[in-house]
Length: 167
Image (cartoon, rainbow, N blue to C red; front, side, top):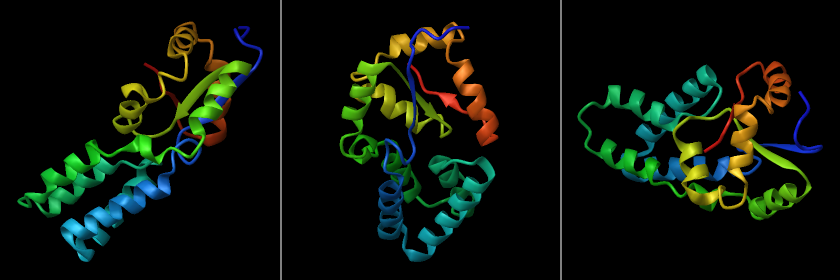
């Protein structure tokens, strides 16, 4: 299959567009402030175990496992809200959207994610990136199988499934 564009930019989310270290620091501070150092450390140990198991950060999954150890702690509701309402857009690297816009003038831009299925689509298609990237063209290519030739080599290289984030 011949790609529609001569040049295709494959852009990962984590630590390429999004500054993950700041998100983790914010979450650690939140857990420390709301639950104390001991619970923060336990939550983070669960988070690290889950990361090793899944290959990506699953903050809600870690919170669910943490809940098993603290089933009656009412602060867990607030922690869930903190995660769901987290301002991911504020953690984009400076100029990340400008770079994507420039890529778009040169060829097709495909955003790849091996991350969770809750947060990344939430901030991607909640308005942040759809304003900058023609998601219709990416979706068209996906429906036609047009990006598979780019994705499969990445799957093999990373030995994990690479998800294409789309609307």
